[in-house]
Length: 344
Image (cartoon, rainbow, N blue to C red; front, top):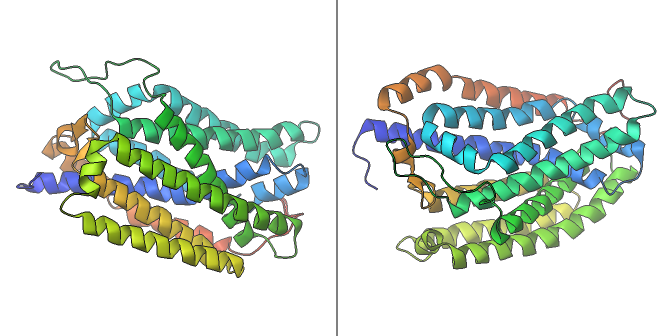
């Protein structure tokens, strides 16, 4: 679609910013969620506690990006917010419950004695439920949904429309990808002579190959099922997608090489770059759709005066949030050992 007005540029900028908020959440909290999934396969309560303590100073700040993304959609694309959240009400409810259970478990594990096993499992199950439901939501989002044709278009489908073989696939893919991110994160956070590091080393090796298969299957399924994606990938700008794919392959090789050489921070950064490039490629494929086949970003956008007022009020917070995320990561950068805890 041709952009002819400044208002349309503002709409595109906010769409890109929302994409940035979402991908920052995926990168930052995805590692925390993946660590929680890994903890389900670790029977040592002290190690589970150490994993929780490793993110004690950062997990709540990481989740802030999800809140900001939801608030930005509400303020800039209210039509999409109302209809999309109606369509995805059930999986997003599961996401919310998972986040709550996980957050409560993170705090209560430190103080509990007799109930500690409950919070061990709550941390892992909450992480798994959040990741799977978020992945299902992404797959359902890519499928689009039906809208009424009245004066105010609204979602008019069924409560279970989100649940399809494709959305279940994206849910499983999200769990595997987060598990890889979690293993990479744990290797960067714990001393190399700890049991957690040794276990995370094996876990990362397994999850790397599972993630590779799951992502390739998801991409192939997307190409076959969705004409809007296929037309972009083999359209006039096919060469741009080939270049993006080549960069992702190089980043994947570099991440694997860094991981084998135990350059753990480097491996984690390469993985973050893979997520960022893949998400950017998805955004380029989606444009100009906000929800594929349902509404464009210009159909869903707020009126120009409301969008401008929201921009003046909110844009100044973005560099502040980026600054404190970086500061927290820097403060809590030291490697840990098994007996670490909130009280130490």
